[in-house]
Length: 136
Image 1: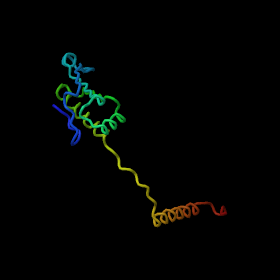
Image 2: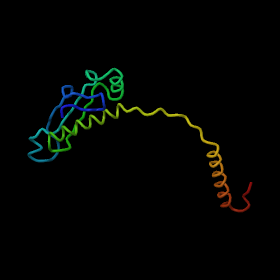
Image 3: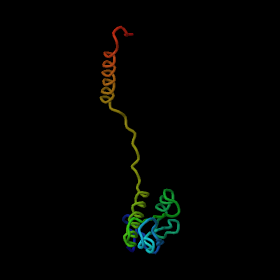
Image 4: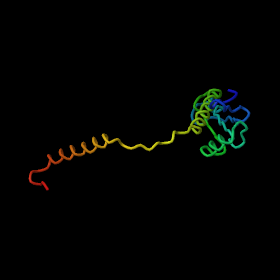
């Protein structure tokens, strides 16, 4: 992969990404001990040239000065690199997602009536379960 397409208008070039390969930990025999399949992908948000000011502020607030993704799921270095690119893209999309502002709502009159009627019915049911003579 040469670049990461986060969303329309935001493409991170490969030159801004720092990739480091290290041996994957854990069991696995000769292949795991000799192959550098673990991928560490780092992107410096603060030094990026592709971000506008608004996007930079938004990413800095949610992710900090740099984003680091570590992948050692697969035995293949190229597959781990592809997974790291994908996870970085997903993380950036999540950080840039803005929720809709909540609008205050008021319960309708009929829903209030139904709620109170349900309480009344429940109260009657519980009164019927009481022992005789314990009425107020």
